[in-house]
Image 1 (cartoon, rainbow, N blue to C red):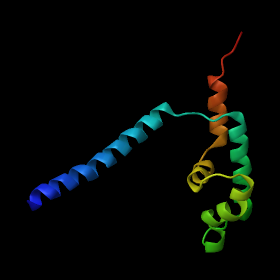
Image 2: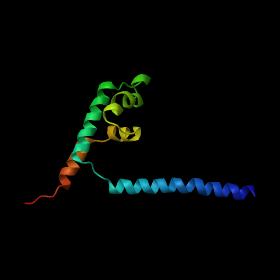
Image 3: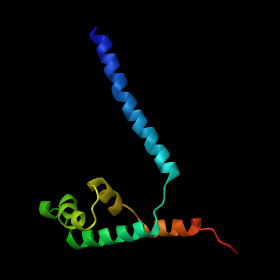
Image 4: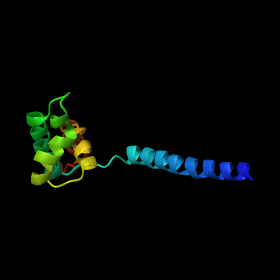
Length: 104
């Protein structure tokens, strides 16, 4: 009976992990871009982070910078904040310019 319980728990553990991996791969292939105003907001958030973040200090870590300086001005969750500081805005602007259709 213990073997049955152990096998079922393995199935439940493996399924969500494989689902997350598949959804992450699909997300990478789709690669949604950013709108112009979102890229501007990302630049503004990154400027605040550059001004206040200090590596090695717990009172100036990313979480504290988000909590004290970014979230009151630009309300967003912490995961969105981490996505913003990890985004290369110049690359995204180039990608948007290449995707823009030309009339002539």
